[in-house]
Length: 402
Image (cartoon, rainbow, N blue to C red; front, side, top):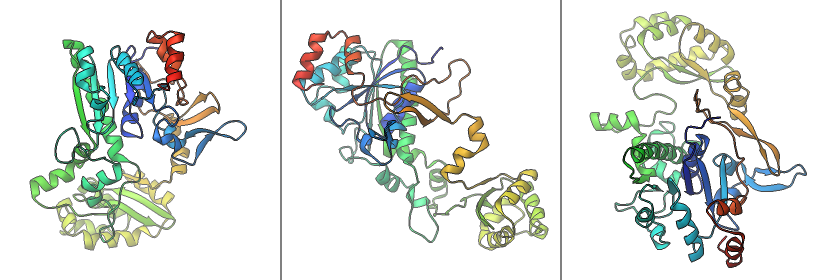
């Protein structure tokens, strides 16, 4: 089966989420991703549970559900880069790699002589991507960066949560995930440039930069209008009604995108007079008078259960949806039809369920080659491919470098 990134070797010195998310996307697209981990403990997320994967006898295998979400299609190489011998292994592998991704603190890789300048001197074609909390320069450069803190510092929590409640983080680590996706895009662009010119380059990715960029329309709202967007809960700053409504048995989302849809909504709710009221006739007017309008709509929505409302809204062509829990998500017929759950054979646990890649490519589809690896599962294999003989591998192991 053809793979979009077949022949691309990625040396992955990342852990937790932003970096592994990036390299998993590259792996899904066919790159050979070698995940470099610390012997003994490995990626921090291996221990971030429960739940943990269990074998057929019910024993924990050492892989948490968190770790499993971001590490499929990779091979694990256990190398201690704090040792000179381990550093030499990485330099040797980097000399034959296309991409290196790392998320160490600023300055750490230079201490190990694994920084971009050192490695690219030996391999000018190398694309070297550093992922940090704050980037390689600026007053915060040497601070550790964590998704939760970045969501707060980067303004996301300032616009998330109920208007009269406390600021809220998003339920998944979106600063990490967005940074991982931006890093993937940057790496693909750098590979395109490398293929055209023969030269690799250095990519400086920061969680804070990605978080500020993903403020999107709300960042523009402030820059253009000079006003700080307030928290709106589940409402929209610039569109009304575009929010969650409570119904008889739960909650639904109603997302009215234009005035025609609003007229149809009012007719469906037996509130046709509202559509002709000048306070509500246009979206701009509805935004200004949301405090008067929304309670009227909410009172009407209490009358039915969500299944009934969703059927009526869909029939009327009004954008809507349920508010699902995670179990509802994986039971949803569209999610099933799109194949968003996949299984792969694990060496200890049999067929393991994973959330599938959303990438659907017609000529080079994503395929599953490796389960999220055991710690050091492929150490000897990778070293043999790099030209190490059995005696050299045994010596590295005796020295504690692998």
